[in-house]
Image (cartoon, rainbow over all chains, first blue to last red; front, side):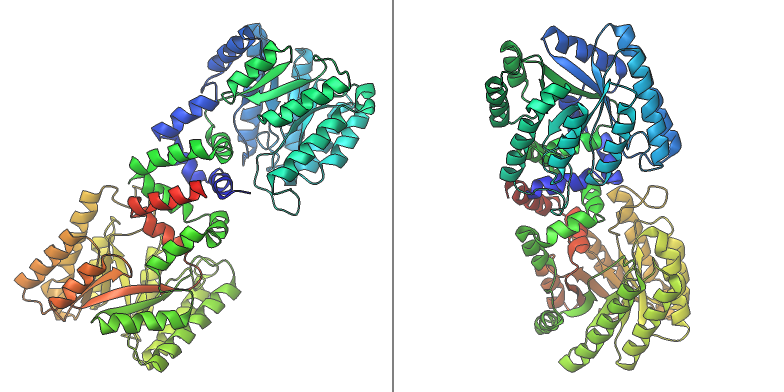
Length: 310
Length: 310
């Protein structure tokens, strides 16, 4: 793992730097590039604009790692409000939620209860809820919570990270269930015990997991794969593999982050693929931005230069 | 307070970044510029070299904020070993110690006991022990521990930080006691409730405290001031004030950090002033280096550039 990556992932966990970044103009500007804005209204407007361009969206009310029941309940209320606003706005995005925002680090039962409320409300409104995957330590709990909900709901899905060594086993289980799975490389700082460290291994794992998600069993069970990467090489391999297996272009989708490789997103749409943009909004953009910088040394460099010169 | 300063002071508290920095060549090289090296032998050699140049020294076995009794006792043993090595090496430096390295954050009584052992051993060897001042939350405990030792020992002194609003009162008490006081601006990240935030206020406070340390009462009580700054303006004001009050050049001293403004240090020696260099050594250079970078944006910039390009 590169030093810049380790550096920004370490920064992402600092409360003090978060405080500081909120008042630092260049960081705010950069956050604007990767998020829809601070408010729900801006998020709705961003989705409307994406839809006009033929892109689907999933909305993420920013926030994570809350440390009190009150914060967890407030975040849940904000997400329920988001579901109401989506209906009122006449748009059809999915939503993405993080269990640590719903209180997983406070009390697992609290997070489960909050997630259940969200999935139930979304189910009534015919909206899909993606449970984002976070640090490796929460993977098992996240998958367990997913399975518990899966017994009752079909509008819920999970995420698999190709940098985790365990992922092939997890995908096998999800394929068996016929779940909707978003496949990503992974954006946290994990120990080599649990995660591949070099990009060739992570890419090879990604490719193998992608093929698992398009297997005969996966198709028979109704697995809906969401291939979430900005890596043009992995996207090309996915297109070729889906083609070879005669998978229709509307029975899977590509996903990318708002503000990252927008031209590639539009090209895929033009080629007839489903493409969904991950649209974060809200005031708690700091850790999200730091993870994006960890992936983008050149952008990180500009920000640090502004910091030092300020 | 500048953003670069806040940024590096926040970095100084990250365990994860510390881990990373230890393996990052450019950070190690930079640490070499501000420290004598990893080993006791290198520290002794650095003091011998400084003495040849007419400079005094205080040795700091790097380390702070230990979280277990074992670490605190190990640090104490290392400092007792340092005192033995000083005697064996035929040099006469003082030593500087941090209470959080002796276990203050684990158990105040443990830190007090460790400090007492160090001061007692130093007293036998005619060595002076400076208790470094750390975060504002520890100031009262540090001053209390100092006073308790002062009842029994004369080879111990404290530090006053001019950025703290409380310092004039603390200096009044120390002047009354006739203590040895090092005056610094302060290098931690403090809240505006307890600390001045802008440099004009910090400088004005520094100047006022310096004058307190040269007052008639201070001189009558045998106060020995150590004016520890790299700020040429404050040094000039100290020289002028000591002159005007007819204070002999050997009844106070200037102190600066190893590797910072070496030419100014030598000029002061040439002009007949006592100058003491603060010489840190040991493997735990990370937080010390981050505080130095917080004070030096240009140096910090070079390090970050190397990081991003690595």
